[in-house]
Length: 292
Image (cartoon, rainbow, N blue to C red; front, side):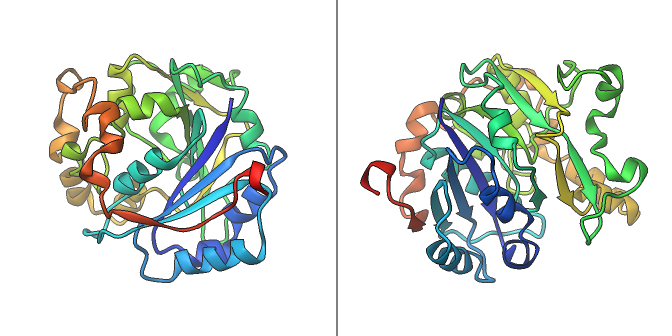
């Protein structure tokens, strides 16, 4: 089984250059046998150029591809659905480990994901999150934990990996492991459902429609620290509940799971379609192992 780490990024130069939590975590993996695909989503702060220079001067122990999209982002809270689709197209591993760019990861997350048996395409495993302050110190109480799965965790307090109840609302998240074949067959993020922060927020429900069981891992190797609170938590703390309600009632969020099709974007044909024509380019890539 081969593994690809997929990281979409946008205007996060301080995280890569100064914080270095995710970058150093990638270099420190106990199992360096993986591919890392970073998709810069048209950053305007020099993120892609800095990463290109860094990888050139400090060749990592893992294979990597650094890509950059050419389409402009729009919307203050636009997220990574389009960049994810580019990454879903370019990865070569049997399994994708998706990571957001504002995470701190432990040295064994790659090795752990390789033990999860997700390559058979029957399940997706989500990683629990811890939220931090600007100094990467975990926030206290409920503010410091991803509360979406709070009740499920309490019910399975002694388990490190457990199936989420069917009532789970089916968001998609920062950390998850899934078979590449499933992502491609379902067409990745559904471009017709991209109404919420540029992302298909019914991603999790679509996986359920595709027959996958959904699991949550609270194993320390897959629990990651997320810089700052989630967007929803930030808005709630600021008292902007009208904005939260507006986002939560966006068209794709209101789509019933029973109305979601098994395939979107043409399934496997999406990856060879004109949708990607001129959409991105390769900034830098390491040489294949057999040509090194």
